[in-house]
Length: 99
Image (spheres, rainbow, N blue to C red):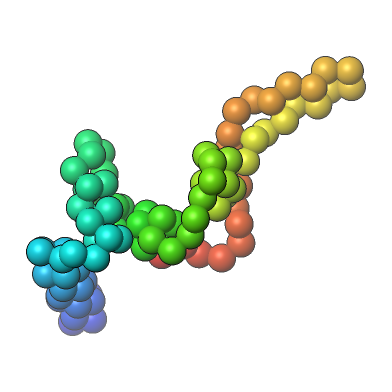
């Protein structure tokens, strides 16, 4: 239990530090975090990860590049003469993404 409390305290400290950095910052990537966090369904944590891991330092030219970076790929259905795309599926990219 002591270890759990220590980790929870560290998480609270990191969240407080993140909010402190966001307040009044003029850095473009932090402005993007704030803008994304205003969207319904996206919190500050998700917005932070999206910007810092995807949009903060990478340049995407289209939605397919974004999907490929996220590990989203088309799922083809190939049955002899019939070939159809069935939308997208999440494909494991090896490694563990930070949460």
